[in-house]
Length: 172
Ligand SMILES: Cc1cc2nc3c(=O)[nH]c(=O)nc-3n(C[C@H](O)[C@H](O)[C@H](O)COP(=O)(O)OP(=O)(O)OC[C@H]3O[C@@H](n4cnc5c(N)ncnc54)[C@H](O)[C@@H]3O)c2cc1C
Image (cartoon, rainbow, N blue to C red; front, side, top):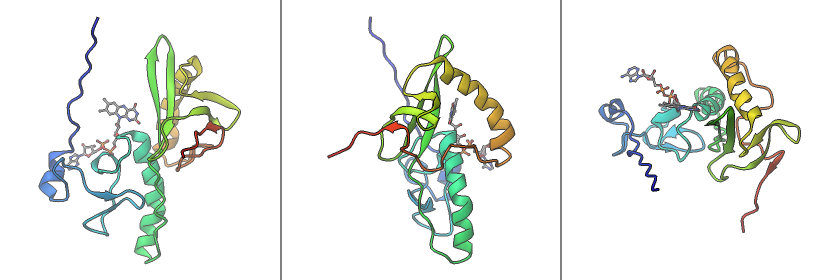
Protein backbone atom coordinates (compact mmCIF):
# COMPACT_ATOMS: atom_id res chain seq x y z
CA UNK A 1 0.00 0.00 0.00
CA UNK A 2 1.24 3.51 -0.80
CA UNK A 3 0.45 6.36 1.53
CA UNK A 4 0.91 9.88 0.15
CA UNK A 5 0.97 12.95 2.37
CA UNK A 6 1.25 16.34 0.68
CA UNK A 7 1.53 19.74 2.30
CA UNK A 8 0.82 22.97 0.42
CA UNK A 9 3.48 25.68 0.64
CA UNK A 10 2.99 27.63 3.84
CA UNK A 11 2.50 31.33 3.03
CA UNK A 12 2.06 34.37 5.23
CA UNK A 13 -1.05 36.54 5.27
CA UNK A 14 -1.99 38.90 2.40
CA UNK A 15 -2.16 41.66 4.99
CA UNK A 16 1.64 41.38 5.32
CA UNK A 17 1.92 41.75 1.54
CA UNK A 18 -0.20 44.92 1.64
CA UNK A 19 1.91 46.33 4.48
CA UNK A 20 5.05 46.21 2.35
CA UNK A 21 6.92 44.62 5.25
CA UNK A 22 6.96 41.07 3.86
CA UNK A 23 9.18 38.97 1.61
CA UNK A 24 7.92 37.11 -1.48
CA UNK A 25 6.20 34.54 0.79
CA UNK A 26 4.48 37.24 2.89
CA UNK A 27 6.63 36.68 5.97
CA UNK A 28 8.41 39.58 7.66
CA UNK A 29 12.22 39.29 7.39
CA UNK A 30 13.32 39.16 11.03
CA UNK A 31 16.61 38.98 12.92
CA UNK A 32 16.17 35.69 14.77
CA UNK A 33 17.75 36.55 18.16
CA UNK A 34 16.24 39.98 18.93
CA UNK A 35 13.07 39.36 16.84
CA UNK A 36 13.53 42.78 15.22
CA UNK A 37 12.44 43.53 11.64
CA UNK A 38 15.48 43.53 9.35
CA UNK A 39 14.17 46.67 7.62
CA UNK A 40 12.98 48.69 10.63
CA UNK A 41 14.67 48.41 14.02
CA UNK A 42 11.63 49.88 15.79
CA UNK A 43 9.40 47.00 14.59
CA UNK A 44 9.49 43.71 16.52
CA UNK A 45 7.99 40.59 14.93
CA UNK A 46 6.25 37.80 16.82
CA UNK A 47 4.47 34.56 15.96
CA UNK A 48 3.52 33.21 12.54
CA UNK A 49 4.20 36.54 10.74
CA UNK A 50 7.98 36.22 11.13
CA UNK A 51 10.34 34.41 8.73
CA UNK A 52 12.63 33.08 11.49
CA UNK A 53 13.54 29.37 11.10
CA UNK A 54 11.35 28.28 14.02
CA UNK A 55 8.12 26.32 14.24
CA UNK A 56 4.87 28.16 13.49
CA UNK A 57 3.47 27.25 16.90
CA UNK A 58 1.65 28.81 19.84
CA UNK A 59 4.54 27.90 22.15
CA UNK A 60 6.97 29.84 19.94
CA UNK A 61 4.70 32.92 20.00
CA UNK A 62 4.49 32.56 23.80
CA UNK A 63 8.27 32.28 24.36
CA UNK A 64 8.88 35.16 21.94
CA UNK A 65 6.38 37.26 23.91
CA UNK A 66 8.26 36.60 27.15
CA UNK A 67 11.52 37.73 25.54
CA UNK A 68 10.03 40.79 23.83
CA UNK A 69 8.37 41.97 27.03
CA UNK A 70 11.84 42.79 28.37
CA UNK A 71 13.58 43.69 25.10
CA UNK A 72 10.97 46.26 24.00
CA UNK A 73 11.32 48.02 27.36
CA UNK A 74 15.11 47.95 26.90
CA UNK A 75 14.70 49.38 23.37
CA UNK A 76 12.50 52.24 24.61
CA UNK A 77 15.04 52.98 27.35
CA UNK A 78 17.88 53.01 24.79
CA UNK A 79 19.57 49.97 26.40
CA UNK A 80 21.18 47.08 24.45
CA UNK A 81 18.78 44.22 23.66
CA UNK A 82 19.29 40.76 25.18
CA UNK A 83 18.71 39.22 21.71
CA UNK A 84 18.24 35.84 23.28
CA UNK A 85 15.49 34.00 21.39
CA UNK A 86 16.85 30.54 20.48
CA UNK A 87 13.87 29.21 18.48
CA UNK A 88 12.53 27.26 21.48
CA UNK A 89 9.42 25.25 20.64
CA UNK A 90 7.50 22.80 22.79
CA UNK A 91 4.49 20.92 21.39
CA UNK A 92 2.25 17.96 22.17
CA UNK A 93 1.47 15.68 19.22
CA UNK A 94 -1.66 13.56 19.77
CA UNK A 95 -1.11 10.07 18.34
CA UNK A 96 -4.48 8.48 19.20
CA UNK A 97 -5.57 5.71 21.59
CA UNK A 98 -5.18 8.09 24.53
CA UNK A 99 -1.49 8.72 23.91
CA UNK A 100 0.65 11.63 22.79
CA UNK A 101 4.26 12.57 22.05
CA UNK A 102 5.86 15.70 23.48
CA UNK A 103 8.59 17.43 21.47
CA UNK A 104 11.07 20.08 22.60
CA UNK A 105 13.58 21.70 20.22
CA UNK A 106 15.13 24.98 19.03
CA UNK A 107 17.02 26.56 16.09
CA UNK A 108 19.98 24.21 16.42
CA UNK A 109 18.70 21.22 18.38
CA UNK A 110 16.45 18.56 16.80
CA UNK A 111 13.70 17.21 19.13
CA UNK A 112 15.44 15.48 22.04
CA UNK A 113 14.67 12.62 24.43
CA UNK A 114 14.48 13.29 28.16
CA UNK A 115 12.12 14.29 30.94
CA UNK A 116 9.88 17.35 31.11
CA UNK A 117 9.24 19.76 32.70
CA UNK A 118 11.18 18.74 35.85
CA UNK A 119 14.66 17.53 34.82
CA UNK A 120 15.26 13.90 35.78
CA UNK A 121 11.86 13.61 37.49
CA UNK A 122 9.34 14.01 34.63
CA UNK A 123 6.27 13.32 34.66
CA UNK A 124 6.32 13.81 30.87
CA UNK A 125 8.69 11.97 28.50
CA UNK A 126 10.08 13.74 25.45
CA UNK A 127 9.87 11.95 22.09
CA UNK A 128 8.01 9.01 23.69
CA UNK A 129 4.41 8.05 22.98
CA UNK A 130 2.79 7.83 26.43
CA UNK A 131 -0.55 8.10 28.18
CA UNK A 132 0.96 10.63 30.61
CA UNK A 133 1.89 12.92 27.70
CA UNK A 134 -1.77 12.81 26.58
CA UNK A 135 -2.84 13.68 30.15
CA UNK A 136 -0.33 16.54 30.01
CA UNK A 137 -2.00 17.84 26.83
CA UNK A 138 -5.40 17.73 28.56
CA UNK A 139 -3.98 19.54 31.61
CA UNK A 140 -2.47 22.14 29.30
CA UNK A 141 -5.98 23.30 28.35
CA UNK A 142 -6.49 24.49 31.93
CA UNK A 143 -2.99 25.98 32.07
CA UNK A 144 -3.65 27.86 28.80
CA UNK A 145 -6.89 29.51 29.91
CA UNK A 146 -5.99 30.09 33.57
CA UNK A 147 -2.26 30.83 33.47
CA UNK A 148 -0.91 31.64 29.99
CA UNK A 149 -3.65 34.08 29.01
CA UNK A 150 -3.21 35.87 32.34
CA UNK A 151 0.53 36.16 31.78
CA UNK A 152 1.42 33.81 34.65
CA UNK A 153 4.77 32.10 34.16
CA UNK A 154 4.48 28.29 33.99
CA UNK A 155 6.80 26.77 36.64
CA UNK A 156 9.79 24.79 35.27
CA UNK A 157 9.11 25.78 31.63
CA UNK A 158 11.95 28.00 30.49
CA UNK A 159 11.72 30.62 27.72
CA UNK A 160 14.89 29.41 26.02
CA UNK A 161 15.44 25.66 25.67
CA UNK A 162 16.91 24.09 28.79
CA UNK A 163 19.22 21.08 28.30
CA UNK A 164 18.74 19.78 31.85
CA UNK A 165 17.33 16.23 32.00
CA UNK A 166 17.63 15.89 28.21
CA UNK A 167 19.79 13.65 26.04
CA UNK A 168 21.75 16.04 23.82
CA UNK A 169 23.97 14.50 21.13
CA UNK A 170 27.28 16.31 20.78
CA UNK A 171 27.98 17.56 17.25
CA UNK A 172 31.53 17.43 15.83
C1 LIG B 1 -5.44 23.92 12.84
C2 LIG B 1 -4.27 24.45 13.64
C3 LIG B 1 -3.83 23.74 14.75
C4 LIG B 1 -2.77 24.20 15.49
N1 LIG B 1 -2.36 23.49 16.59
C5 LIG B 1 -1.35 23.95 17.35
C6 LIG B 1 -0.92 23.24 18.51
O1 LIG B 1 -1.48 22.20 18.88
N2 LIG B 1 0.11 23.75 19.22
C7 LIG B 1 0.73 24.91 18.87
O2 LIG B 1 1.64 25.35 19.58
N3 LIG B 1 0.35 25.61 17.78
C8 LIG B 1 -0.68 25.16 17.01
N4 LIG B 1 -1.05 25.85 15.88
C9 LIG B 1 -0.29 27.04 15.50
C10 LIG B 1 -0.71 28.25 16.33
O3 LIG B 1 -2.13 28.39 16.33
C11 LIG B 1 -0.07 29.50 15.72
O4 LIG B 1 1.33 29.29 15.58
C12 LIG B 1 -0.30 30.72 16.62
O5 LIG B 1 -1.68 30.95 16.78
C13 LIG B 1 0.36 31.95 16.00
O6 LIG B 1 0.02 33.07 16.76
P1 LIG B 1 -0.01 34.49 16.09
O7 LIG B 1 -0.40 35.42 17.19
O8 LIG B 1 1.28 34.74 15.38
O9 LIG B 1 -1.10 34.46 14.93
P2 LIG B 1 -2.71 34.20 15.05
O10 LIG B 1 -3.03 33.37 16.28
O11 LIG B 1 -3.09 33.71 13.71
O12 LIG B 1 -3.24 35.67 15.32
C14 LIG B 1 -3.31 36.63 14.29
C15 LIG B 1 -4.50 37.53 14.63
O13 LIG B 1 -4.48 38.66 13.74
C16 LIG B 1 -5.81 38.90 13.32
N5 LIG B 1 -5.74 39.66 12.05
C17 LIG B 1 -5.47 39.19 10.81
N6 LIG B 1 -5.51 40.17 9.90
C18 LIG B 1 -5.80 41.30 10.59
C19 LIG B 1 -5.98 42.67 10.23
N7 LIG B 1 -5.87 43.09 8.96
N8 LIG B 1 -6.29 43.55 11.20
C20 LIG B 1 -6.40 43.16 12.48
N9 LIG B 1 -6.25 41.90 12.90
C21 LIG B 1 -5.95 40.98 11.95
C22 LIG B 1 -6.43 37.52 13.19
O14 LIG B 1 -7.83 37.60 13.26
C23 LIG B 1 -5.82 36.82 14.42
O15 LIG B 1 -6.62 36.99 15.57
C24 LIG B 1 -2.12 25.41 15.12
C25 LIG B 1 -2.56 26.12 14.01
C26 LIG B 1 -3.62 25.64 13.27
C27 LIG B 1 -4.11 26.44 12.07
